[in-house]
Length: 88
Image (cartoon, rainbow, N blue to C red; front, side, top):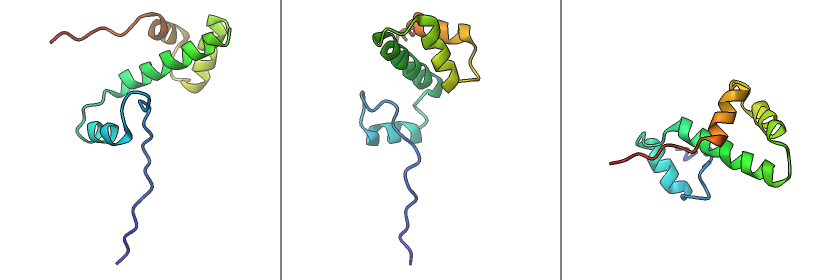
């Protein structure tokens, strides 16, 4: 019997916040909102680009290369408008 396990295809985009095991568990339970994770990564990369003294427009253009399906204004809104807090 072959005990081959496929390589892990998911990478943890929230590795600075939670462990890989916790991320995998949350994904398997359907508790991760993929768009919110994408927006978090965009904001994080934008801040890193701005820290390198890259102009705002150029930073957004760089992000558009990675996310070509997003418009310039969409990325601008993501990086300049903080996520809304969910009240319980």
